[in-house]
Image (cartoon, rainbow, N blue to C red; front, top):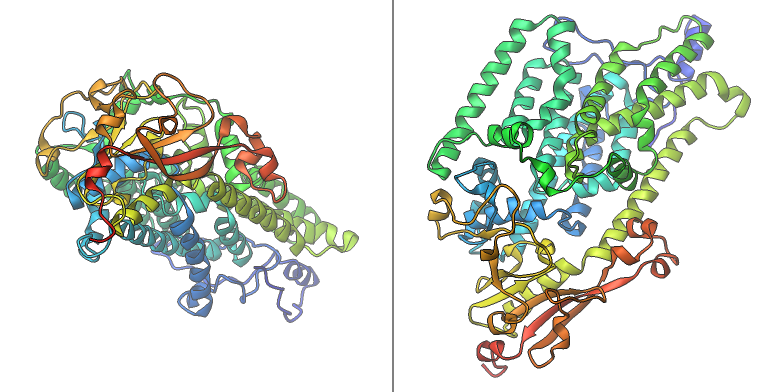
Length: 617
């Protein structure tokens, strides 16, 4: 991860020899730039040898660059196959519309009604084009699900590679290495890197435009920011406020900046509006509609729940470990370290503005989002690259201070500071990953089991209905149901708006459905059945059992005259488990501090009898 400092010839000036020994002065290749005012590299950390994992920018396509990409890709591959869908918004607002685009069925949320038009069909189409390369008529839909995830992982790894190499250009190989391993070892990257969400797309694009900004390629940075805002999520521009200030005030590129903004806005908007117009049957600006609804509407996102600031603080600690706090205080840490080194190392010229400039996007995001009442984990995804950069700079600054001031007294290798931070992140990340897989994989495993049974000719051959009640939010999309099956909702204690079924293709695109609202009010028309008549309408039923029941949420498996249990898996019961062990897996302690419920797949004994495939057929 870190490399030893190469032995360098002793310079003529002793003070420079000491600075090179501690990595305070570093030879960094000239950066590529389209700006006449090229930036000087930021003084890097102690271990900035040219043999680091992140190669010299001149040789970015060489073996070391390939090694960096392999590390990033390996991390995303874990996410492709092990990461579950952690947010039902990903299922119903993105995977289900994609299923409709490809197969002509699935659930529709109110945001896709032409009456509201809060979601862009162009965003869905950009993911759906991959079905031409691997059609679902040839491969099983679950395989396409993982194929698309693999594509997302490849895109993520490429964008992260670009940012990593750009960080090396300005901050040096030590900071770039720390950023690389902090990213790959964190649970936050595991969750976000392959999620089919606009916020994950923003995370990819943040890596791109940050890389362009670090290399002073302002025109490309502005284009990517515009694409991120218009294509995926308009709120992502909050991260780019420092970029705009850099162009307008620091570089005095007012005319050029305005030109790039207008050009990118017009071109990207024309393409997106053209496609969305065709899909909706009427002109729509999805990015403007979602901005209006969330910011200028009296309704807004607070209808879907509010959380205190501690929600984000806990979430970041769970996904990155306590090391992320260094990123939060990276600005004062960097300033203090530069000042301290200048007092102990002769002729050292501290560099403040450059580092502070590239750390500021993180603080812009915190100011904008941490004080919003409605909070979601996915809202943090776009800032993850910036958070890891800030954390890496903070760790590198601490290493520099230690090398320059304390090394002679303590004799502890400064490399230990970096290893301690990375090992801590790795332990927390792996523990979180294990907790997610061991505690919450029952849902995906159950639907995969049902698909395999049907595909292999067991249980059912005719059209069948799979009903979900209180486990509706764990439905993993129609991609995991056989082509002869469809999912439906049965009434439960959840008293808010559920998705409806898309109308037949292509009417479901342009027709305004009945019984949709933007107030999150319950619509009884969504229910295919209720608990008392579910056995008359549902061929299969997915149910969770946490040891309690009510009139609307009975334990269906107890009515053995109607239901037969096909699959029963353990699923973590959050309300009865210790808060720490809900989030982290600790060997030998985890099982004794968590409690499990049951995730069941039930088969209707009466309805399914008519469609069973006989063994001798």
